[in-house]
Image (cartoon, rainbow, N blue to C red; front, side, top):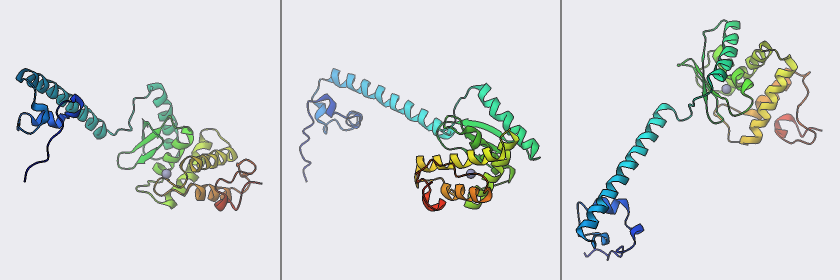
Length: 229
Ligand SMILES: [Zn+2]
C-alpha cells in the first residue's frame, strides 16, 4: 500500500524535531529533504542542538522532581525562627526534635519516618500550620486519618498557647484557618481532612469560644448548623 503523499515540503515550522532526526535514518520520507546537502547538514546541526537542549531541560526537571519539587531555599533566619518554635514545642512535650524544612506551595506535611515537617512558609497561617504538624509529631502519627487530624488540632491549640496565645485565641486561630481552607479548597481537601467537621468539632470542644464567622457567612453552614446570624 502506498503511503499518503507527504505535503510538508516548504514551511520550516512544519519540519518537526522528529522529522529532522529522521533525516539521518530515512532521507526518502520527509518533504524537508528537498534541500541542498549543505542546508541539510546545517539543519541537522540545529536539530542536534535542539535535541541536546531538550535533553538538558528534561534532566534538570528530573533532578527537581527527584529532589522534591516543593522544596525551596528560604532565608536562613526565617527557617531558624520556625525551627526554634518547633524546638520549644518538642522540648515541652518531651519528644524527639523535628527538622523544619520550608517548602513552596500551600501544603504542609509531617514526614514521620524522616522526622521532618515540611512547612509552607508562603501560604499564610504559618504559625498554625507548624503547630498542627507538630501535633502529628507529638502524637507519633504516621499515615492519615480524620481522627488523627482532630487530635493534631487539639495539640496544635496547646502548642499555640505555649507560644503565647490565650486558649480562646488559639482555638479561634485554628477555626479561622480551617474556614479559610474550606473557602480556598472547597471540597477538594487533603486526604484525611474534613475541615468543616474539624472546625465544628473544635467549637463543640471549646463551647466558650464564639463562632468566628462574619454575620451571614454560610461557610461550613451544614456542619455549623446554619449560617452565622
Ligand atoms: Zn494534619
